[in-house]
Amino acid sequence: MIMIKAQSSTIKEYGFEMTNVGAQVGTLRVIFNNGGTYEFDAVPASTFDAMSKEKSKGKFFGQFIRGKFNTRKIEITDQGGKK
Image 1 (cartoon, rainbow, N blue to C red):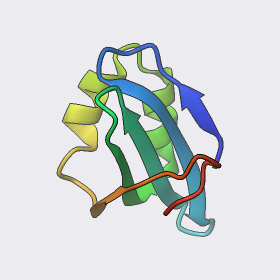
Image 2: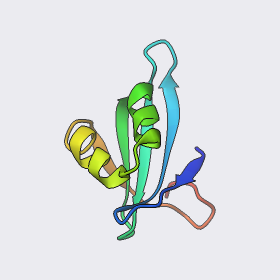
Image 3: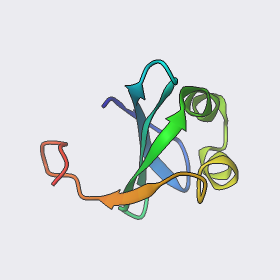
């Protein structure tokens, strides 16, 4: 998954990996400035695209992602993979 650096007071980086091309949904990974890393399942590609275009990533996240998708906290190894 390619991560994109965010210029945000809340979000450090975010990325998206398509998991179902037919349904146009995937996994959104968000690394927060406080160090927490979370993945959100079945996020529409259009939501990721809209987040990428939005100036305030944190505000967009709070309005359109938080609490709306299955979520799991993950730990990232030094090599960038999941623990």
